Image (tube, rainbow over all chains, first blue to last red; front, side, top):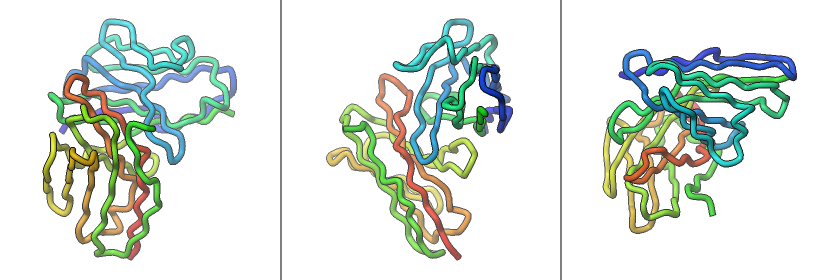
Length: 115
Length: 111
């Protein structure tokens, strides 16, 4: 089946630094990818929709200058958390739709800890 | 009112039990209903996908949708310790396929 590869799986960084998270669709082309954030025991919260070759669409309340999304090819989308702070510590997950209305394939997630 | 309500649990059952997981939703426009399983520190994986009302069975898993009461269920028969995970329901409309997720129910199946 379709696979979305996400890395790193976990990262620890210092406050004020930037972290890049990559998501690749391995055996299909993903014109659209979605980025989610998940706090412990909470639901997935959609942060932004990433479209290949165009600007991402951010959900209300998500700072686009802090969470930079790039979708330069049909198989790669990146999320960069800029000037990270401890409150940015969370589980970040990407996903892509792999067919017409038949659900989404998710990456394995990235646990970000900002110290 | 949240669009999708789901009891976070945890739900603890003995091995072999029948498990019932449920969600309610508020928007009658939702047409697609999904269940995802998420193991600790992993991304969700699609378990079941249904369109409109009715039942769908896949092995030990049965998804049920009752649109009249805006209620969706996932049943797991002969539960196994390997079923221990968080189960998230998700709904989406026909016009937009971006799903809205419940907060997930933590299931623990003990031997």
